[in-house]
Image (cartoon, rainbow, N blue to C red; front, side):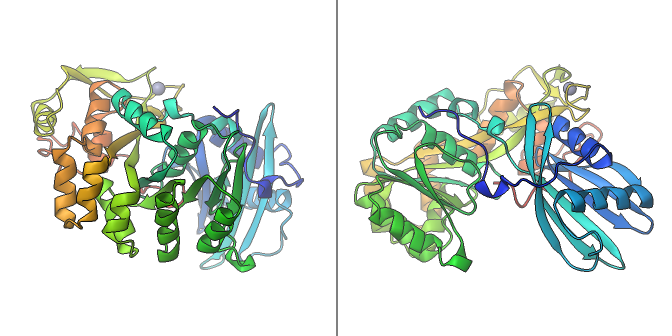
Length: 428
Ligand SMILES: [Zn+2]
């Protein structure tokens, strides 16, 4: 097990001015307390909306007056060493927020918006405190055992898939941390590197400086890497290098965009990696997403409705007698949820499955084969987490749509889109 990783991205280690006490510092303090990852300020007419993204969802916090908006934007510009007078050009910068022992690097983007407004996005970058260990990701115990078993033999390709914002990078890092990193050469190529990992040679993609993902991968392999981490495979060359390196005896952990286990395999195949290579290289595919974790302080227990029991039955998950709904209290800043947990679909490819894949089955056959092998879907895992009281059934509807099972008879009982605007396109 490696030690606690250090702080974020070297780029964030700026010595720029801290925000002085005032509305900006108060707003960031509130965002940090609520667990927000992003702050948005969007002006219209003579006011502006202040919104936070918390656990992947955007929440309107308050409407700012013209004077408040101007003051806060000016404070952001001063803190990030940007030109206060520049209101007609896009600006980017960074500053550091510090309050007691909480230190955050904050990335700033400001753009001019019509007719003569400015819109602001502040990204609160992850701090070392946010590092998640493998046991906290939310795997089932049985899946975790299988994963540990696969990771014990140090070769082959492991894919971690999910849509943007599904926590793939976190899983990549947490699984890496379970390896004996002191006694092997581990290297990563990321875009960008979110966390600093001890004993890992971390290369960042920087196309302006000629570091493309595929060039970076070749360089790292030439530098004697035993273990490669790739976040994320998007191009043919990188996909091919990753698969070949795995076949040649390296351990390769890579993230890829895909909606389930079969989708992840298809995604790599679409990048022209033939099935006969994939069948030999691929050892495990983990597909994932994140659901919000109910606040244990205020969640409300209630009996399961009939239509909900049918949903559990249709997915062959034992239905609980009762489930919990979100409520809201001071602990969770009235969100009813606090943090997120992963839901996973884990497929292990043994020799037999590898040979079968090498034969080039059709897409639909891949999905069916994994079902037949007993791979449990993301939806099943989400329902298991509802049954254990970790998340709400509303979260299942939010992810998988009201088309899952039957629609609720009484719309007032379940509003799957309550408070939802959109999921974050940026957070990995
Ligand atoms: Zn609460």
